[in-house]
Amino acid sequence: MKYLKSALSLFIVPISFLLILSLPVVASDQQKAIDHTGHIGKKIHESVVQGYRLAYHLLDLPGREEKHLITYIRDEQGHAVTDAKVGYQVAAPDSTKNNVMTMLMNEAYGADVNFTAKGTYTIKAKAAFKDEKLLDQFTFIKE
Picture 1 (tube, rainbow, N blue to C red):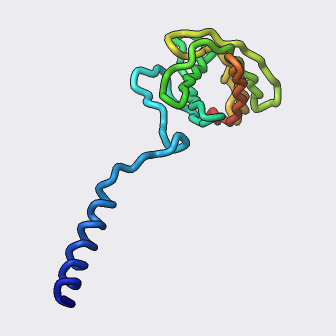
Picture 2 (cartoon, helix red, strand yellow; picture 1 turned 90 degrees about the vertical axis):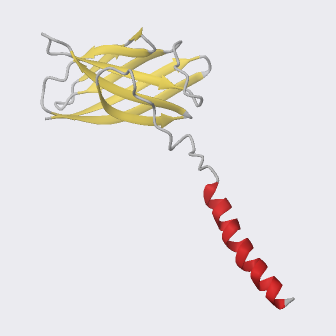
Picture 3 (tube, rainbow, N blue to C red; picture 1 turned 45 degrees about the vertical axis):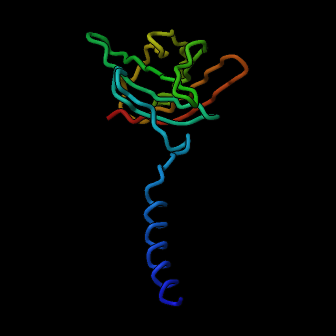
């Protein structure tokens, strides 16, 4: 009987361990990143605010000094939020502030922003839709 219990435990423990390892790992919403397939511009920041994922891309505009700052907003299921009013407050390296409202373009919000001076910019973004108000802030360094 002792031999049977030992043999059984030698069999059950490794099988249990393998079953646990084979369970799918589910990432939390905080860990999931936005799929940037099809997004235009270079990603400069990504964050999660109140369960919504925000990704910021910067697009060079040919023949213009301004850049186009684009914000992609996705809900917890990954669907684009397309009914928001989105605005930026951009503080330049010399501390001057510029407020800019975006326009909806292809499931993203974009506006021209002046990033001509080298240095650190502080970007505050606000998105309002339905009963939600998302506030985000990050820095961008222009070299």
